[in-house]
Image 1 (cartoon, each protein chain N blue to C red):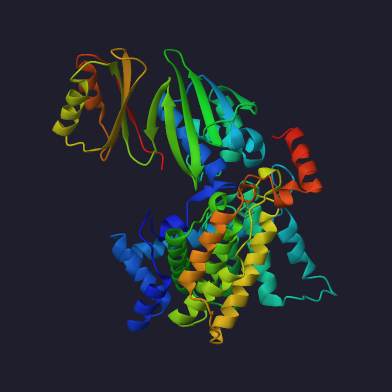
Image 2: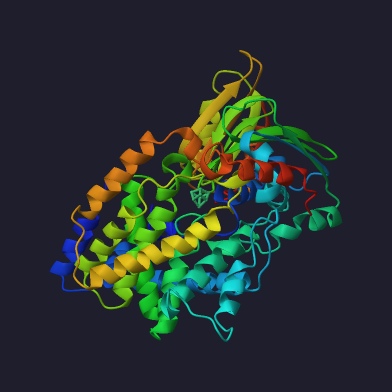
Length: 220
Length: 296
Ligand code: SF4
């Protein structure tokens, strides 16, 4: 932490957790999806469900999906911009379920070729954490570039991925593998110090057992 | 947790080097951030610019999405130009209140602000620094230096306690902002590093115990007016410190006590909007009204 963290972020108000954090969560969702979806459904839990209108959490999430930053003065008009961009969206405040974290949002995103669900939380001061993708638990704060792979849960896959990364000089800051059942589909989220380039992603996708590799740029 | 920082240590080192606390903080932070003093100063000047734009935006009187706040900075400013207006606070304090409210109202209205240290408490520092800058015609370079002092005080508080209302109540947000602004004010007016540290301690002492109880869970009521109050407390603390008055309890210990008090605070008083003003009959009624609002 330094003085620019204390005197920051520069952001559109009113709340660092409910507005700035929501922009970043939307940005993470966009990155995981790989662009702007056609349909976005956002279920809000806890304090997000209670206060999202007053805090502009709704417009902030959409602004993030549009790829905007926390200090973008257009945030209050994000709905209109989203409609012009062809995004159909809807918010479902879920006030009966008590979430693990008070500021939780679950995205369901659909496009022509892809459908993804993911969950994120806003932990305070604009800091966020992506906690789940398609039922796999993950952990990413949006501070680092990330690599996301979907692969078969087979021995050696993790080692292969890390050797490809080290060959192109990408240092791994943190990695987490998650699977729903042994030997089934697994998801790996790798936080890296350097961004993973398109040609590396292509090389990764050629590896055995790897179904998908995607880069998630930092949102903070 | 991060290692504890000491405001007294910053003050000692600045005194030993014979520099203002601001000049010392700027140099020390540039070193720590591995950048030049010039580029750090420029980053602070950029933030100052955002603060000024937020003041201007707030002065236009835009209302918040919920409609609970907005327009009061404009109202207060207009009152001062009515013929029979007699200001109980005096011109300097009046301007600080106007600016603090303007920024807090801009924040509530989804304007662009600098979270300093948080969005909820974003009016305090610009309220104090920009009003003093204007009243005493101070150069922007000096204002940037004052922001560096504020930043370092915030860093110390973050390391010893917290800057989050959800963790420590409003004393952690508006309280920290007041301590930051008090130190900044002393630096602006040429006080010694020692005086700046004393001002921060005295400001925080006056904010200890303050709970976070936002009506309808929104950063609006009582936040906007607390920003005004915290700015005034910062000025009072700076006024005392510049006269050589000292806090009996040293700054670091005051911050430690803020942590202790925050830890003991019931969770109703830590941003959950279930206690205090949020739980009053009017507060509850407003929550229902806000819930039923169709918002743009
Ligand atoms: S009352 Fe709570 S939300 Fe409002 S400024 Fe204070 S800490 Fe922030």
